[in-house]
Length: 275
Image (cartoon, rainbow, N blue to C red; front, top):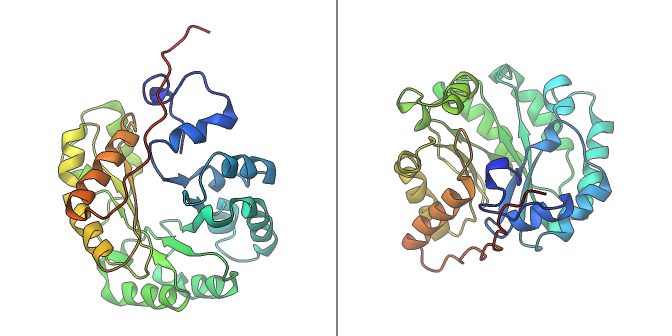
């Protein structure tokens, strides 16, 4: 996401027209999760606006529509997929990866369907898969089966790390809501491709969030030294300081890998106005 009520006037200018919001977010971070595409395929005009607001090296990780992944479970979805791919074409190189988030009911017995779906996808995009069925994390045979399907398509496995979040009981309304909704799965941090993607959920307390991501600082630094190009998304239950925390994470990694390029300078936020 690139808009959040608590960022307005504090991290980004307020008010901002819709066609300027992503540009201001891109002053903080150089990648974004395209979660809204899960609910509806955007128009080409909307996507063209996203491209105009970002540099060619900005990274979009766009989630495939739920019609494809959840409702049709990767079957009989060619028309919907074509419509989605056509809509995002204006992004060009900014479409870093297409994110195939599968429902928790998607089990090892469904991997053959995923393998077939990946084989049918056009090769001019990169793909990354997020699974939430516990067996993929606790049963080596299931994990190996999934990895085999992903490697055959040069697709990445996206871990959603909630281990730090579930380390202690929730202390806020936002944490309590996340506690009931977020997956609780073992940590996985193996990269399958040159472009690993990580989703990390911390706590509302920035210190706890930073403490919990130390594993990923080490891992990301190691990937960079191997010549990989990781993308790491930092979340908290309220996301109030997510852009600030993302930059702090980047700084932590850059302290280990000084040749890592700095993030852009944020566009100054205007003071809040009444109108």
